[in-house]
Length: 362
Image (cartoon, rainbow, N blue to C red; front, side):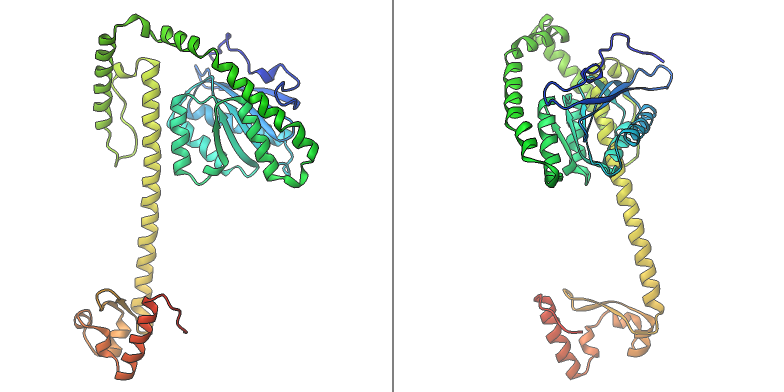
């Protein structure tokens, strides 16, 4: 297994207490992917009694994600009583990427875990913001998932959500200790980091080579990459499951790899929705077929009536026998023509009330 010896462990691996919240940090543990050449790792610990904090490193594939989720289950079983509700907080700053299948497993785990009150993610790179926003749009667990910019904001939100979830167990002292002072710290942290923004932007330009190319050269390079990307997107068959691999030249650099990861994730979500829709349509067709079969042969007369057209849409065998008309003729007439004068009046009155939204008796 390839291990990054220069990897700096998460801050909570060497401290007994969080300097921001004052909460104790216990049970620090490290996960390492077991696959060949897998450099994916994650640090995890318990913050206070109700918060699990984690920081992942590297690129996670489907196999490593399965191992990590099993590790998380084991961690929760060993350190969190079943009666305790947990808020999960994850730092994304050192996560380089994830394949679409890994993300689907991750979302399913967080969505279906009954012990989790909420999930709070922070330091999300752009690609993961795309994934997060898409997941919130498409999944029913959206209200449990949150994304913020900093650790301070994540802790503030976690405390607020915990208080909301178990207000009866929180004392006034707890609210005082973790309320205004934390918000002030959060503001100080954010304002302090703003002073270094121009330097960080300059450093990013150097890192990306932006200061070494003329504007015209950068425009030509961007146009060429954009054209290749558009061609690749156009080549995707959105009705067929799976995502085609891009040309090797498009996939060589890390930035491009992140773009194609994002496209692959979006495609996998669309595939999942198409599969769910197809399965629902199949169930509906089967249910409709069973209903038709039941109605057709039941020993009672049934007809389907189109309010808009005033015509019979379908009849069963028993109704054909009762009426004495062939099926083809029944489908071309108004059912009122089959009623007695008294029945026609009752039916018309009740139909008018139904169409106006009024209730009628059985």
